[in-house]
Length: 383
Image 1 (cartoon, rainbow, N blue to C red):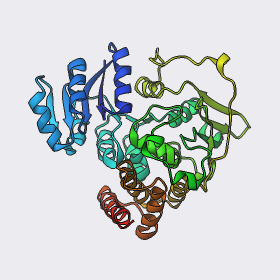
Image 2 (cartoon, helix red, strand yellow; image 1 turned 90 degrees about the vertical axis):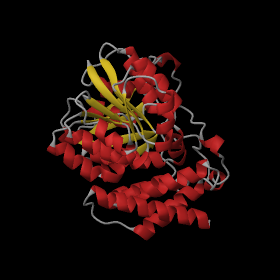
Image 3 (cartoon, rainbow, N blue to C red; image 1 turned 120 degrees about the horizontal axis):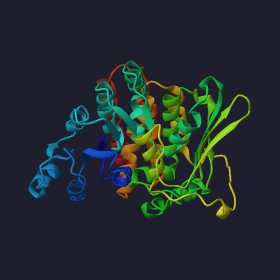
Image 4 (cartoon, rainbow, N blue to C red; image 1 turned 90 degrees about the horizontal axis):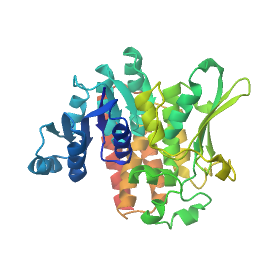
């Protein structure tokens, strides 16, 4: 029985992880579940999965949870608790599915504690890739990617000589606004942005898909996860979301990972690696496949992708700056406080004003993250 700590168990990735654990309850047990504010859902999960420990990172929500919870699990409150529970003796594997840079410290602590690691949090590698990879190398930790694209790349590399890689072809659906002009993007609403054509995801990831910022984050992730230069990572729009990514080798061969658009497939492989078991997902019906399209992304309309690529290539702390500014701008758009195109405009201004420096420590990244967030908030407030 493998004991799993699911950080972010009530979110989109978290709830789908619980689907996988439910299906394979003879092989997995959720020893730790953690959420920010969704205490009702957390209580339901606790009643079904009987964890040993529960974390609520929001202080007020944590107090309310104590009033309604009548189980016997350890209850820990506050963001710092995430970094403590990953070190528990009754945890074998940590799945990091919390949103934002909050996932960075728990990831580092899980690696240092010698735990298996499944990573669904993009921002951890975007902001702190140098620190995470340094610790992973030191502790011989294999980072199992949960993102569908990175799982596809990971699976396409199994059994291959990485020296033979010519290029990573990172696919994108194009989101709900594929084909829109920049002028049209300025008029879209939150409701419009939440209508992703193929994937069922949380609000933050869905919005990042709408701006294509998420694809920029994934390029940076791929650079760190697979040790491939940015010039050898290409973004291709594949609207049907059937091909989840490809790896081209020097001999001209291309290995592609295909499957239905169901996050439970990469989640389960991250938990079961190197084994494959029955999945909650449906099978692909190739007879119903009418076409496969491949398009170049529109870098003029989707400036977030352009900025993320620039930050990744520049390196240092600039990806941390970029990510912090985006998180603030995304929150503003979701609150109807700015336009969609104000997101990339804000990110660009913050990147220009804060600049970059070599990554030295977690404390440095936290300070830069806070400074970038404050500046982004000021820019958005001033309009």
